[in-house]
Amino acid sequence: MGFNGAESTYHDLLQQFADGSIDAAEFETRFLALRREKEFFPLRRRAKLVDRLMVDVDAFCGDPQLRDPGDLDEDQLKASVRGILSEW
Image (cartoon, rainbow, N blue to C red):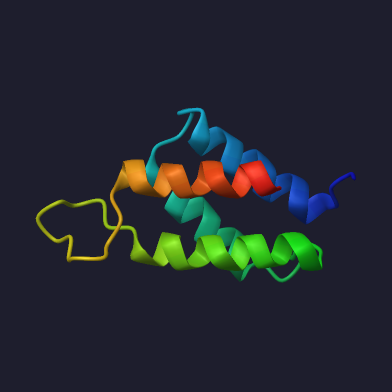
């Protein structure tokens, strides 16, 4: 199954983070910017994956001194992204 334009954009971003091309802070910034763009909505099945990932992006805290129990660090966020990619 191919990707629509939004799906391709999300997939590329997830892949860049998963392979280390960008760090978690850059991923978070770009992911949230995509979520705000009205034209970047993936199709239904993949939209559910993006929604699930949004929960983990929201739980990400890059600063260990500010991290609360239940917050995710960069490695945990990357593991989530890789899991989403495996289902993509």
